[in-house]
Image (tube, rainbow, N blue to C red; front, side, top):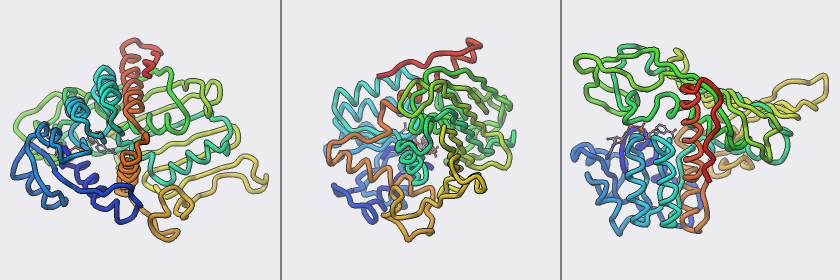
Amino acid sequence: MIGYGFMGRAHSNAWRQVSHFFPLKARVEMHTICGRDRAHVEAARAQLGWQYAGTDWREVVESPLIDIVDICTSNASHTEIALAAARAGKHILCEKPLALDSANAEKMLAAVRKFRVRNTVVFNYRRVPAIAYAKQMIDSGQLGQLRHFRGTYLQDWISDPKFPMNWRLRKETAGSGSHGDLNAHLIDTARFLVGDIAETVGLQETFIAERPKEGQAIGLTATTGKGTEKVTVDDATAFLAKFAPGKNAAPGAYATIEATRLAPGHKNYNYFEINGSEGSLSFCFERMNELQYCNRNDAPDKPGFKTILCTEGSHPYFGAWWPPGHVIGYEHTFIHTVSDFINGVATGTDVHADFLDGAKCVAVLESVVASKKAKGWVKVANIK
Ligand SMILES: NC(=O)c1ccc[n+]([C@@H]2O[C@H](COP(=O)([O-])OP(=O)(O)OC[C@H]3O[C@@H](n4cnc5c(N)ncnc54)[C@H](O)[C@@H]3O)[C@@H](O)[C@H]2O)c1
């Protein structure tokens, strides 16, 4: 595993827990965790349960003792690490967004294909049981043909103009702001549940153009340094999208998608609603064990939404956990991801979301930025 910040901790927990709950087709050995600072990575190793600590990711990636490389670093380094890992024949889990742009994402896709290694992008929300169940409902036709996807991903952690700079606020390390960070998840959910996105038009805004310089960065928080620095990414991005023709999307199906990190009161409000010809579904991560479902054919005196508590043994992934009603949380989505990936590697089967999904997501992100410049609709590059 490369990187030991927020995602490094979430993924380490997943690698540590997975065999205690899921039947695996291979044995997990948490071999080496890698960072740039010897003392910090050594502390992370001890706390997170890894055997060895390294400070040179190239050495770690090339070690013959390692089969899987888990990339938990900031966005700009995903490409270089993944290319080296693929070349070394390692299977790769990579955090989202896959790359800073689609040129780099396509290089990564070509490399995993050339070296025939399993690959996945950690779009962990696909493995929230409620969302995985929404997928089953949609694929079995319960919503009919889908017409609308309405997604909003709202956070507030940079609302204070005094919040200092970090890598997420610089284009060279993050690629974009709320767009690649949060819209990437909504785009993946929309693609997972409805289908490919063909065209977009959007707008972006940076409301707080300068922030105090970064002091010492620790995960999402940082101490404040001296002076200010220009913010080079969006604080908020909203766009319209037209879906490509597909199995689930009705002709003319469209999405509205919005992300901001300047919505006071919202912490991780990853919300979507889907309206189909036969019914509607909605989900909010802050109540992640539930789906809201309306079947328009319900008896006329009982219209409206009902809550489905997705904690039955019959719901995806839930059978590995607790009795019904004993809810699960954020960390479980990573355990589910790691479980599917290990079994995919062990049995030689593909694991969604793969690098093709990751590259398609980057192409949608990019089209929105291009549409802002073009002041009109832009076609999404058709990555195959
Ligand atoms: N799937 C999700 O829901 C989700 C949530 C948060 C973050 N992410 C993604 O995970 C990735 C990491 O984000 P985070 O929140 O953990 O960030 P973070 O700042 O908490 O941690 C990043 C880590 O990467 C390390 N790092 C950076 N460059 C490195 C290099 N060249 N060599 C070795 N280590 C290096 C840093 O030292 C740090 O340990 C990002 O791509 C982010 O978009 C995904």
